Image (cartoon, rainbow, N blue to C red):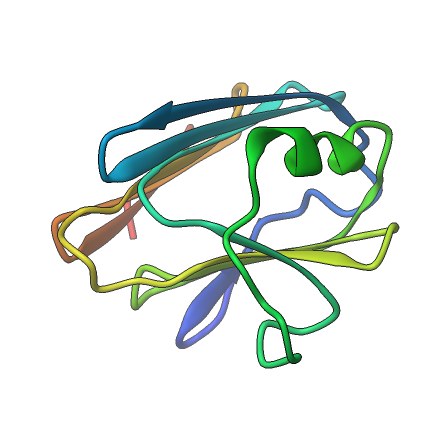
Length: 134
């Protein structure tokens, strides 16, 4: 994990997605990705899965079945922004995008014994285990 001025590079590159679970609720979506490096990405609220960049035409909120395309994919990039946004890019060409700033969003990325990044209610927090909080 590396901290830059406006973001954290999460150090998940090369990790494989081993499972995806999606729950649909009234006005929200829950998503959990488990990675083979003992990392977990959990989202409550809007999350967008696109093929290519989020600005690509047709970037829509996808259903649970479509999220399953990530199983077996490798993480190419995973970045948590201090604004609360999160972007992960996968070997399949899919991009997971979570916009920061929404009160309805809660996001947590945990990597066992290394870090936990969370965003809720307008605040993003990084906890690095064995180091000071930044």
